Image 1 (cartoon, rainbow, N blue to C red):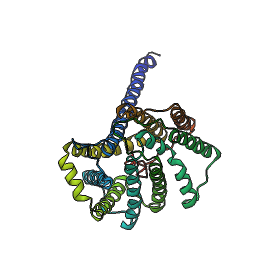
Image 2 (cartoon, one colour; image 1 turned 90 degrees about the horizontal axis):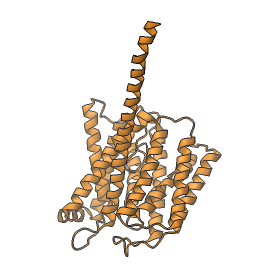
Image 3 (cartoon, rainbow, N blue to C red; image 1 turned 60 degrees about the vertical axis):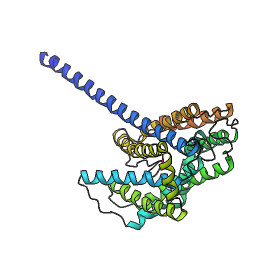
Image 4 (cartoon, rainbow, N blue to C red; image 1 turned 90 degrees about the vertical axis):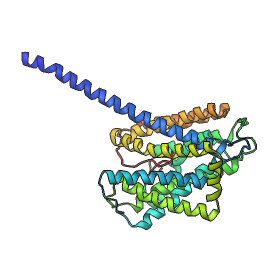
Length: 349
């Protein structure tokens, strides 16, 4: 009995140590995702919607931002592969990486361009509706079947997003006067949602059957995106004007560097969270991040919300939280979020 009694305290100590370790890991994951992706959201709104300099010039080169983000992520992924001494050779045929890159670039470009015409809160809430095109493409491409709760959730999120978009208060932000065009902005967001849903489903199909390390996939997909986005910038004649703009406005240069840095850093935190805590915890954190981003944007950039928009936001986030807490068995996944932007590189932050 004496032996049994003396062995109990070490067991309790071990249990407390495990709980403490989990708490620190959770704090690390939540803090990392919130800081990087909330910062990313605020920076993309500032770059695309706030004028620079005494002349009040707007940055107009969305594809240049895509190029900067992708080249940073590609370089870090290559460094990670070399440091871990993992295979850097492509696992799948190169053309498959290029095909995914095309839709991924279109997704991110629509995301940035939409900010010229709609506010960040509208854009962020609209992103919550991405499950709808994912379900559509999943049915068409992968022949997936969905259940009644999935359709109910999609309906509620669509309803909430529609209310939020259709009942705006007059935007009195000093940064957006004369630039709002809700119809064009909504069309761009529909393009974002359509391309984003197609990218994730298309990528799942193209890379099915390959034993692919996640950094290998990120490296080649973003490398192809670098080539395609740089080609697009040159063809549009925007490369020199974009460089001249950031040269004239050093604060814009630092904003873009920070945007690319937090976009790349978010990849690590997303991957770490999914592998450590599973997809359920990750989905809950991401929903909270979107809510915090909207609140901060409303305060920082003076976006007033009508009472109808508050109702729409409650419907959307209430539905998403209900989905997270009612899901029975969290499934672990190696999917990763790319600014962002979503994909198996799965969410453009």
